[in-house]
Image 1 (cartoon, rainbow, N blue to C red):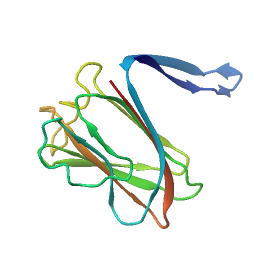
Image 2 (image 1 turned 30 degrees about the vertical axis):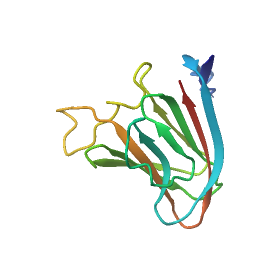
Image 3 (image 1 turned 90 degrees about the vertical axis):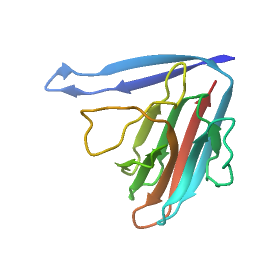
Image 4 (image 1 turned 180 degrees about the horizontal axis):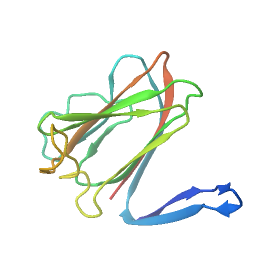
Length: 157
């Protein structure tokens, strides 16, 4: 086992004032890392899948892999393209979804729970005021106007 250290740092001086910030998160008990660069086309495609170890429908294929939802602690998806954006769609066990645009060069971090992974980690619906968290089932991706290279980093316990 190892400890993953995630460091987020912003460096900026504006009007002679330093507004920089640095945050570090340590995620312990990591036993598996997957780091892949995949090509995302302009057609929505499965990027990452998540299931329980007892799931019966593991037949779907995902560009960056299928993972045990209880073990995933950290996900980073980086759009390596220099001009095109991608759309990431997150679907939960009730088939409700939310989508986010990740512009060229940007990253999206999805934090797993420190003890239960992706189980009960998201809510999508008409109202976020009444929240009942569900399991993340999969993440799909599609590129804007041309295929994009995307780096996927997943840390699991």
